[in-house]
Structures are given as structure tokens and as C-alpha cells.
Length: 237
Ligand code: ADE
Image (cartoon, rainbow, N blue to C red; front, side):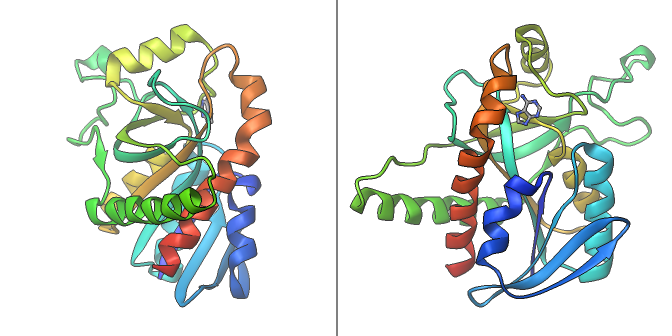
């Protein structure tokens, strides 16, 4: 069984529409939908925005449904200038950009009393997501539709919507991340300590600068439609 976690309704909406034999259950105010996409068993949930909801949802999903892997799907702000809106980022690893115990001599992002800084994603799941994108692109080419561009790299998560050039430069300077969002690294940390393989796939909704607020509102639905299509191909593969 695959677990899918999104932060917002708009990010899960089109994935939910693909699911058959749906059954739902509520745990701590989060709705978990179990069902099938093709022959693939799936459990999915909208966790809410930010690291606390993301961690709660991931732990409850693992304990209640024992998924074989978890994929965090949604939108992100671009930090890498090569990324355009609706491009996909597959995380190689994730950091918490707002974890800061530098005052006690730790590197930025390091979680005190552990050696955790960056949480690596499962290479096999990320490769299978890339294969799904490639298959989808082959279909798009036939339809003479735009192809999806993918980048692999580090995603930085934190409880902040990044909308200023200075914030963006600070995160890039500290972590060399290519995209930012608000849940991925929390989901990664919970999966990591529970030994559940995970990956994070995000479509760019904005460029995390002064245009971010407008672009996020305008493009989150279009970007979410792209990741939903990839999940369909991933489950049908
Ligand atoms: N998710 C999408 N865009 C974002 C941004 N600019 N900052 C944080 N999370 C985001």
C-alpha cells in the first residue's frame, strides 16, 4: 500500500477523484481515505499546512495503515532560478530551514542531540516517480502537449511562506536547496525514524519572491493537476 500526504485540499483533489472503493476514517481531525488507483492500494490524507500537522498525519498514517512507502505530493516555491511554474522537483533530501540551534554551535538545520540535518529520500521511489513522468511525457508528446521538466535536488521546509528575495537567498545560501515548502522535511523525519521509505514530489506554483503570493493563488491548482497525473501513471505502472 502506498501512502500519499498532501498539505491542502487542492493538492489531493484530483488524486481522490481517481480512487475507487473509497472508505474514509478520521483521526485527530485528519481524514484518511483508503481505496485503489487501478490495482494499487492507496491511503491518502490532507494533513494541513506546516510541519506539526505534517508530522502528526505521517505518524498516524504509519501506525494505523502500515503503508509500504509514503509520498508527499504538492506544490512548492522555486529557489533555483532554472525552475519554472509547473516544473516538478523530486527531492534527493530535505532539510528544515527554520531549525536553528546555531547559538549553541550546531550547523543550521541540525536537530539538537541527534545527527539529523538532511533526510534522504528513497532512491527507488524517486526513480519510479521519474519513470512515471517519462511515461506521461511520452503521451504528452503524442498529443503535442507541453512536456514536464523535472529537477532533482534538496527541498527546504519550514513554517514560513517564502515571499521575499532576501528570505529566498538566505535559504539558498545556507542549504543550497532548489525549492521550498512547509511540510516535506517533517514527513521525511517521521518516515525516517519509523524506517518507512518515502519520497517528496512537488510542482512549482511560484518563485518564492515578491510575486509568490499572486502566483501561488493562480497556479496551485494547475501545478497540482500535474502531480496528480504523475501519481496516476505511478500507480498504473
Ligand atoms: N509552497 C508553495 N509555494 C511556497 C512558498 N513560496 N513558500 C513556502 N511554501 C510554499
